Image (tube, rainbow, N blue to C red; front, side):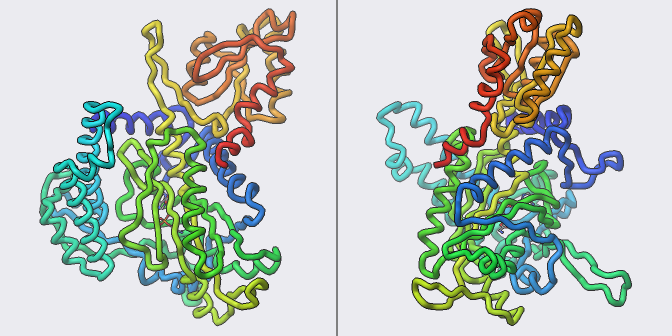
Length: 514
Ligand code: GAP
């Protein structure tokens, strides 16, 4: 655990030192769970967004984009259920005065049982080698069976209590499991209370006439209220999707773990409108499609798992998370929900406007069902960044820090390094940059010895270093060094563009998603 904590601390400090993420308004000591993306972070974030957008919108001819406003008519949130039901159960520890989400305390306890079971499974796999039958072991090993059964009972009871609003039982469960405050170790808990997560604000200049608004807690509702506008103006035929990326705001009770749980964050969501009765087929399709998108980035297949929800949100008839193995364990990265016709029906009811589709194939009008995919852009950033940050010991015993980002997402694709700061090498380097910058984000560095410059680019995740030396002046060749293998090749300057393109182009990477 200590190792994991160290790794995570390292992620946070590396993000700051190398210009990826800063605490918001740091000169005023920061703002809890709000962060700013710095010069390299903003590029990485933009590239993740673009990789998602291309996969969802450009690669599907039945999905279109939208950019709805953050501020929406307040009735939107009444209709969506957020005013009444967008709550988290909170609990305070009386000794440490720390506030927690009661469900997260219980889920963390359940996750520890899962980890204990996994440890037994890993040990057995090592002992039995190729002959190991994992499925059989999980169903017959007494300890594993007990751990997993206990986990299931706990999560089912929590889901039932939360569903029925029995907060006393949620507290009773915390007490029965003897869950202690991670800060003080004390079990002196308050009662569990519900807390609405929406941020309120006002629209209008004078206090009397001001209208109470909310900052949107999800981007999805901007899609629902525009469903018919897009369908009609785009002459869309069901099934079709509307995709959107943008900011969302939640007054999270516990906002720890860096950019994992923020109060201001960005979502990448897609609502897929389908014929009623066909939603489960599309739900499975999107689970599969989204997992493939994640796997295409090469962060390790074992770092992903599905978690099917026991407790369904107020709008869903099926839901699963794609969980990622973050430095603090497996946690939700993306949610896939079958949202039924809940949202469109509710907006029909509250607005008095019909939100129906005439299906020429069935010759009938209906309110479509919706399958949603929703991934946090900041969480994607954390997954990619933390997984890529590696400390390596080299053959000569020295070590290097390398950010092995998927090259399609790297903030800078190549950096040009003149071997020395004279003899026309900076000028030739500049010419190379001027040529490459039409296609790629490139940088230039002439400070320090070339070895140190390589290390700096490794730590920034730059896939290629291009070194310009005296031979370059004579034969128009340069050395290109590959970040991950540190292999160096002598190549013609005229070949650089296609070498880099082959490695970093969206096309190369998107081909892995299908
Ligand atoms: N429209 C559905 C929806 O908003 P959600 O599970 O509440 O569902 C979807 O959120 C995704 O948004 C999550 O899987 C997560 O990646 C991201 N997310 C949610 N709350 C977040 C927060 N406070 N900070 C960062 N990302 C968050």
